[in-house]
Image 1 (cartoon, helix red, strand yellow):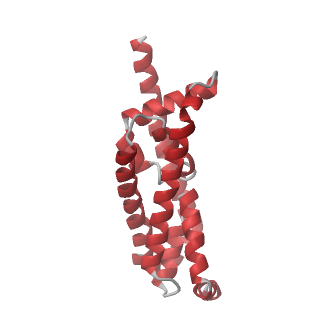
Image 2 (cartoon, rainbow, N blue to C red):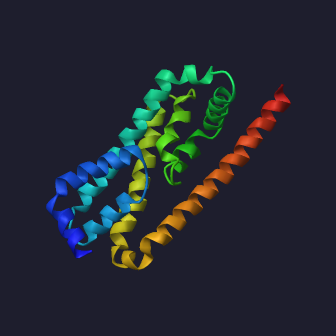
Length: 191
């Protein structure tokens, strides 16, 4: 571990850029690990927090913009894919604020999380404010947690973090499944 921390300290600027790129694409555990490295003095915690926030915020802004620009075509696709996009946009329309705050946490969902929101009628301004608040909360949880609990981090082990991430994914998927079915039922009753 000492060698890894020395390597991180040597390539500090590159580490911050990689953290920014990682957070723009996904929401795994790297901000937590970077905060742990900051707690040892290998990185600056304020730059870790800034890189994680900017990556998380700007990545979702880009996905929202892509969905806003090309989403109408996705909704009109025939077959299952079109129905999938239509149902996802209806769920995001109905539970938009809560959804924006929740999709960052489960493993694998952040990569596409902002797309359904871009398919809704939510204004870009409202999305940007909620996205910024959600990204800030995410940074506080992950970077703050990694920095504050850095001393006990080694004892947790990667396997436990993976299990916790899978638990979050399962809770999110069960909730999404229930909301999906409820939306389908309401839609069926309206027809």
